[in-house]
Amino acid sequence: MRNNSRELILLHHDTKPRYTDKTVDIMLSPSLYTLTKKPLEIKYKRQAKALAPSVLDELLDEGEYSYDVFKDIDGVWVFIAYDKSKIIKLLDKFDVNRVYFAQQSFELFKHPISLNSNQALGLVDNIVTTIPKIAFGEGQRFLSFDNSFTPNSGGFKLSKSSNDFIDIKSSIILSIIFMIFAISFGVEGYGYSSTISNQSINELLEDYPSLQSKYSRDSILSKYNKIDKIERKKREFLKSISSIVKYGAKLQTLIITDKAMIVTMSIKDKSIYSDLAKSIKIKDIGNGIVEFRESI
Amino acid sequence: MNIEQYKFEIVLISSFLLMIMTFIYKSTSYSTMKSDTIENKIENQEINRVIALKELWGDKKLTKKVNSIKQGVSQAKIKEFKNRNKKLKASFQDLSINELNTIIKKVTNLAISVIKLDIKYKNEKYRLELKCKW
Image (tube, helix red, strand yellow):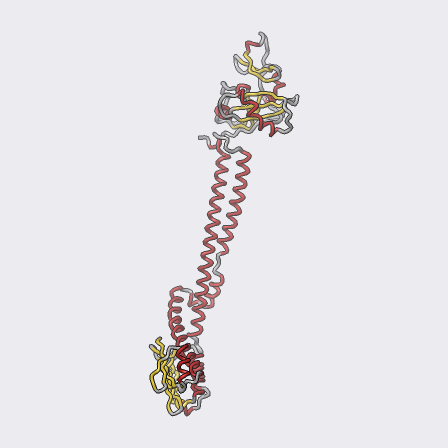
C-alpha cells in the first residue's frame, strides 16, 4: 500500500464525514458506486473505459454517471460507475486530493470494517460489499479504517464543478494554449505600437524649426502654392509662344499682367495659320496678325 | 458559492478573456500603426513640399541672381534696371530677337513673380518692359 501521510476518509452514502480543513483522500464505500467484473480480452484501459457505459448499463438507474476501470489481481477488468454529483454533495467544503474505490483495496477487507452501528464492509466473492452487522456471528471483531487502505494507484481527481463539460487536464492544457496566444498577441501588439515612429519628420523639423507648427506650414504652403501655380502658368504660356514662333510666326506684342496673357504674331503664310489653329486656340485679327490669349 | 470549487473553470475563462483582450490590443495597435504610418507619410510629403516651395520661391540669393538678366546686353540697350526691396523694374530697347530670347529665358529660369511683361516689336527691334518681385 502507498505510504501516505494524508488522511484517508471512508465515505458512505448516509454518513457525513467529520470535517477537516486539511487535504484528504477519499475511499468510496460500495454504496456510492456500482461495480461489475468482466473477463474481457481488452488490452488497454482506454478501450475498457470506452466500453464501461454499455457494460454497466443494465445495472444502473437513470442518471448521469462517470466511469472508471481497472484490472484486479486476476487480470479481470473491473468496471465501476459512480454519480459524481452525489459524491460532491457529501464532500462539500472538503479539500479532496484523490478519490478511490473500496474495491481497489479489497484484500484489506477480508476482516470486516465497521461502517456504523448496523453496517460493516466485508468481502463477498472478493467484492467489497456492505453487510449488516447482524449477518456476522456474535463476537465478530470489526477492524477500524485507517490510512493504510490507500491504494498505490488508480482513483480519480475530484473536480467539484457542477458539470463535466471539461476536465481538469483539458482545462489546464487549454489555459496554457490561451496564455501562449495571449503572450504572442501581446508581444505582437507591443511591437506594432512601438514601431510607430516620427523619426524622419522629426529630423526634417530639426532643420526647419519654423515648420514645427501645422498652422505656419499651411500658411506657407498656401502662399507659395498660389505663386507656384500662377508663375508656372506664365512660363508655360511663354514656352508655347516659342513653339509658335518655330512655325514661322513673328512676335509683334506680348503682354503679361496679373489678369491675362496676350500675344499677337504676324503670319505670312496662311497655311501656317491653319496648322496652328489645329493645335492652339488662336484668333485671326486681320492683316496676317493672330492673337493668342489666356487668362490667369 | 465556493469559488475554490470552480478554480479551473475560472483559470480557463480568465486565460481565454486575456487572449481575447490581447488579440483586441494587437488588432488595435496594428490599425493604429497603419493609420499613423499613412498620416506620417502624408505629413512628411507635405513638409517636403513646403520646404521645396520655400527654397524655390523664397530663395534669399534671388536679389543677386536677378542681376544676371542684364548680363550680355549692351548698356545702351538698357533703359532702366532697378533692383530694390525684392522688386525689379527693368526696361530694354532695340533688342534683337536673340537678345530678347536670352532675357526671357533668364527671367523664366528665375523663381520670381512676373508682375508685368510687355514686349513690343517696332522697326525690326524689340522693346521690353519688365516688373518682377520675389
